[in-house]
Image (cartoon, rainbow, N blue to C red; front, side):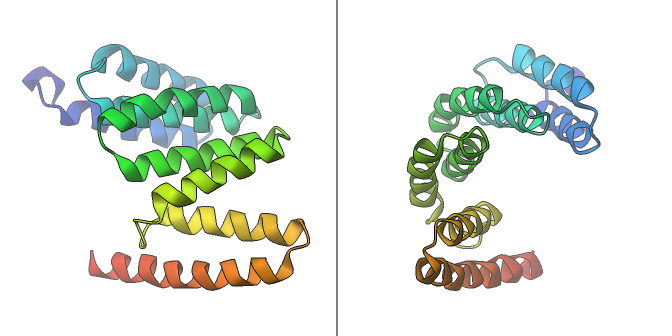
Length: 169
């Protein structure tokens, strides 16, 4: 694909790198991600942003929460330039998660709110389902059981939408 000048080549390489992350081969994944960034530059901002998000996931899985947060923040300008609003919402979800793991609770809650704002337009999205589930767990952990239950009602609505979209595809 690359020799033919196809823009899909970068996404094919990205999927291969994501597979390495899921297998726990973080060094191999990081090398592929960095290669994508070097080859893509600013020509494909959505791919560049998603690659940065994936580098963050690779970092968070190794317990480097601050490094992950830096990658998530770095992805936002490219995703914004690409008008990739669902990925922007997902970036805020991931950022909120890494901030929470790092013990930065207030920043995590603020970022969670931004994630919900961005993802609310995507009722059938897995990232919205994940963010709402995390928010419900946080509310329950903070002793807000009624709020947690109310959020779980929303989680169930979104879960139904996610499942319906999966069947329609």
